[in-house]
Length: 183
Image (cartoon, rainbow, N blue to C red; front, side, top):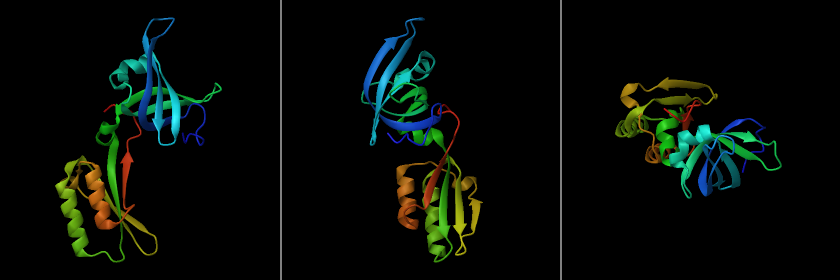
């Protein structure tokens, strides 16, 4: 797992698949909790889901389910672990955690046809998430404009693909909420 840049106690967000789930009860209070293994493309890490968090997210804790976790990093023991605080199914992350869509356009070569195509794509993906357009000048200056409520979007892979097909790879970024995964 790519956790080397984090320190003990840091709150991180991470997605992956639960490849092992062990449900248990605490010795002291008899409350339900879970010990799971979360796997992503870089490795596997053990995640402890104590009773308070388990009560919130137990419906997502199933073997082979893909989830997005908010957790605290624990490096106190020999093996690094995560202490879960909240979770969402991976398919709900885009809807529940996207704060805005940011589109960067270079002013060089920008024409009316491209702007009309951009307007059409945004209008075909109507939703509640604001879209911002940043115009980047040859001098590397940036001017950011809000598109207005008429062009708020529903974030999706299709939207991003359509925008990047029109404007180029890397021109679209998603800003996420930093608060809870619960909204």
